[in-house]
Length: 361
Image (cartoon, rainbow, N blue to C red):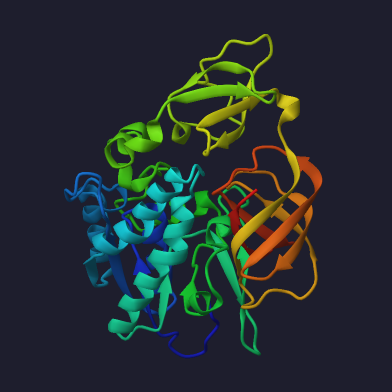
């Protein structure tokens, strides 16, 4: 958080009812900010209030209780239409294109921050803040850098690598220097109702439905059955719809083989699922589109970086070559498996997250 000798200003905190966002609000209150809590009401599967996990009635109640204990105003803002258009429709379109989209990344980049910043501007507040585990370093000459959170197990810079410089310039991450157990202990010390609340890792808009049920309802055409082929074109079986599979998947193929089979490719044009053995997996390079460089512009020369292709993936050394039209090419020092179109590639130099984009392959 900025180091100011006088009042640090005012801040809108995006609250979800969970321990992280509530504790973030508490830390900001203690730091002397004028804090306002806001929960975004998001689109749900059945259009009914409470079906989205991020704004279910119990989450609203716990966020409201936390705000009352902290003596800060709390508001629920209806953002269902924008969330549906930007996040849910993008997810469905990705499924139709045969990729494995990352709606949480899209939500942060194209919906959540813009919505929170708009609300902050309407309320004449200086900053927005969330409970993400990441840090921001501000230069005295202007500009910002996105840094990893100190808790390596909780670091969320990967999911934030799509944020633009102008968004980060008005953002605070109060939890960036804390470990998760410290955050829970802080919440317990304040007797916040969410101190023991468990985290949900599922897609928020599914509600109680599973992914197949969602697809059956909103994009049934992507569940068209097709052939499972090996790399030589030999038929190995039939699949239940390309959208139900992802690159590197082994279980659930329903194909018997003397060696385990893995998904290598989804051929949307033919509707075939291409499978092979573990040694067939992996690539040493791939392409990235919609690249966001947090510094505000693409570097003029190739960069030596480490790249992460999944939130929980191990980083590998690589060279990223900037290209026109927000594109880049990545050459890996180590062959990497499970490179999946639609997922995010984030670029790092040490603790600094330089940005990232959508894997194309």
